[in-house]
Every structure is written in structure tokens, then in C-alpha cells.
Length: 471
Image 1 (cartoon, one colour):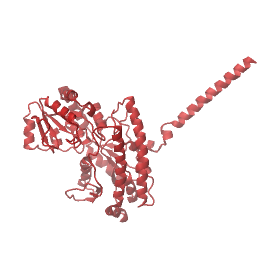
Image 2 (cartoon, helix red, strand yellow):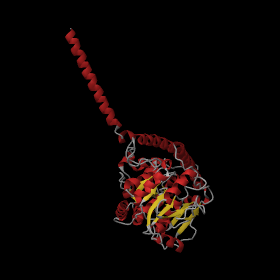
Image 3 (cartoon, helix red, strand yellow):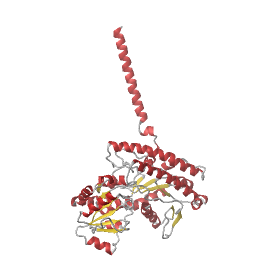
Image 4 (cartoon, one colour):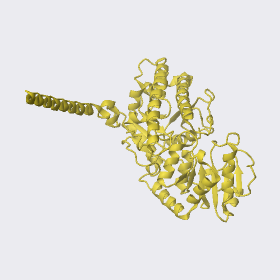
């Protein structure tokens, strides 16, 4: 939810500021009105679930996540199409230059966009989900392409490659039959002529994705996949006086700790929490920790606690030396923007893939919850607090910022481009190739037949020669 409100809301607001009239259908209407910004609110029509999974990762947790994704997606589809104000859009034949959809766990909105007769731009705030690759013609190879829910990054072990292959197949089949098929039937209750959703998905003009190759590595993205990571990071504001003094009076600098809403006192194993506190208490640095309680076990004196903290403003302060995080994409982006090294401890969703990117890019190191001990965590902090490591992160930050145009300008330009050139298709040819051709199975079959024919001829010649000698 926080990612939607921050990344996508910033983008939508900017469209308005640049002169566009924007109608937004979402569960998160604006609290303050904005001229030319029109909300169709679905708030309260569907329960928004947060923190519904345990912090211990397992195959069963991944299966539950996948089921949650497809089930919540189909429920969202029913809520969307059943809303009276949404229905008025197609009943009154409302005209739109472009429809921007969230590229996540349902393709239902593609059917609505088709009915409205507008080109589609998709926006995404995470790495691609398994069913997103084929529609854009993006190669998926488990040997080097990260899998959103699993560890290994771009350098997986043999076992991790096997994991990815099995889960990729499972999730794609699940999505096709439990999401797309259900959404197709839901759309058929309202419209008579909606093409197959997978076909409509291939007609998406552009995918604007909140990634960047300096953090996530180089992918074989086609020209209509645009990376815009970083546009949500705002100019830092002055810190509250008490917090400013705590940071600036620190002789050895500050470690910032935030796990979002992932780690809570009620759900965190006591031994893991004690390991974190013991490790942090051994460093001379002061600690700022976003925590939902007023105290921590042992009440360590060097730790400043708060239920809410201005994270971007804290990370911008030069005395903040390290960031201990669950590796959500917003915090990770703010860390690389400000050049703050990370100790990444992934817990849920896309965080394992983000943490792998943090380590591979050189932004930080990662530690998994099962290996979390006081000694292991100390070693991780010793690594990122090393001046040489921090100097490298500053250089990485400079390279990450070095772009031909700001990311928001890029996001807006390609959105407007899709509206201006709606009759053109920009997808890669690979999106239209069958699996048999894509994996060259037909060519492989021909080579196998030639080999079998060659073996048959040799065998026949050998048999005839042997028969002649016997005669």
C-alpha cells in the first residue's frame, strides 16, 4: 500500500501538474483536492490486508503469497467493474487519451481500457512477476534472471535455479487458470467483445518500471520497457529539532534502522530481536530505530525510538553511516540516492530479490533471518561501516544519479508518447513468437531427425556390408 501511495501517487500528481486532466480509480483517494485530479474511490469496498504473512520464509509462505495475489486480483476485478462510477465511464462513452494501469496481479483493467478505446501504459513498482515476461518478449532464464520471491539474484546456485524453474512454472499456470480465466469471465458479465486478456496484455504500449540497471543489473529489456527508479525521492526537509540534535551530537555517526511494518514486537521471535539489540549496542554509533513500541528489551541508551520517522530526510544527513532495512524498494531507492550503505534483511514479497540486488550492486550486504545472530550481524555492520565500502557506495550513488534526463521526465514523456502515437505497436517481436519457435524446438527436432536418419543410414550400410562379407 505504501509503495502505491508514494510511487504511483507522485507520478499521477505530476501528470496533473504538467497540464493533464486525470481520473483515478483506486482504493486510496487523495486527502486534499487537486485541480484536474478526479477520484473514483473504491475505498472501503475491499479489505486492504497488510502484514498477513509470517516473517519466516518457506515454500508454503510463497504458495500462500501466490494464492493471495491471484485471489485478491480477481476480487479487485469484481469490485472495479461493479462500481457505479466506473460503469458510468463506459456507459457515457468517456474519452481518454491514454489509460494508465497498475501492472501487478490482475489484467482486468485491460478489458476496461479496451472498452474505453484508449491505449494503455502500465506502471510497476517492483521487478517483473513471472507472467509479465512473455507479454513483453523479455527473456526469462533462471540461470541469471532474478525471481521476485526467491533468493540468488543473478548468480543462483544449481538448487536455486531448480527452485526458480519449478516456481515459475507453477505461478504461471496458477495465474493463467485462477486469475486470467476468472477475470475474463467477470469481464464477460459486462462486455460482449473483450479479446483474451493475454492478447490485450501484449498490446500495452509501454511498461514504466521502478527499477534501474545500476541497482538491479542489466536486463534484456525491449525498447518499450522504461526504467524510472528514483523519481519519488524528494528534496530533504529540515529534521525535527530533537532528532537533529540526536544525529548531529553523535561523535561516531548514526545507524538508521527501519523494517517498515514487517518486524513488530508481537511477531518477531525474541531471540532474533535480542540478537539485533546486542549487536547494535556493541557499536559506538548512535541508532535511530523506527519501532511501534515505546521501549525495546533492555532499554539501550544509544537507541532513539519513534513510531514514525522522516526516512528520506534522515538518510540525507551526512552523519547517517548505515541503513539496516527489510529492503523495501522505497527505502532501498532512498539509500542509493543518498549513498548510504545497507545491511539488507529481506522478509517478504520482492525483498529477497531487492536484497540480492543490493549486495550484487555493491550498495550493501544481506543477512537472512535464519542466520541472524549477534556475531553475524556485527560482521555485516563492520563491512558496511568500513570507510572504503562507504566510499564505493558514494561513487555508486553518483553513477545511479547520472542520467540523460530525470526519471520523472522519462515517465511522463513516454506516457504522453503513447497518447500521441496510439496507432503504433512498440512491443518486441519475441512477444508474438510461439514457445516452439522461441526455444527453437522445431529446429532442435529437425537436427534430431537428421541425426536419427544419419544413424539409420550408417546402421543400414554396416548391416549390408556385414551381410556381403558373410556371403
